[in-house]
Image (tube, rainbow, N blue to C red; front, side, top):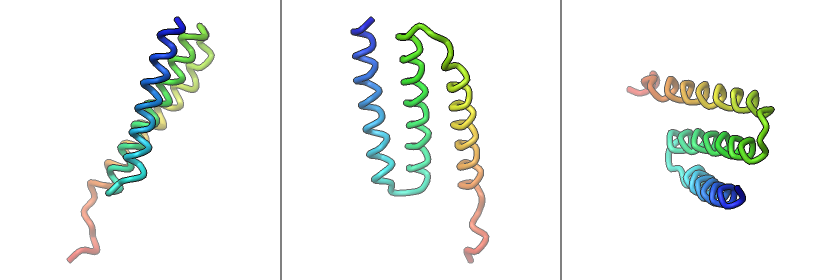
Length: 89
């Protein structure tokens, strides 16, 4: 199980590093929103790996809250991005 845990931590660290790089570089707000959504997914995966390695199910409410947060933020950004600019001529 420790090999699985080590590989999972390595891959999640690489994914988080790439998402933070995209968050820092941008260049648009939508790129940053996608990077934040990816970070939420990485955190959810990390919590899931920790729960699997620790063999407990007490983190299920945390995963539910994170999934609702990720979904709500994605929908909010999509609605904001789809609105036409009313001040443009």
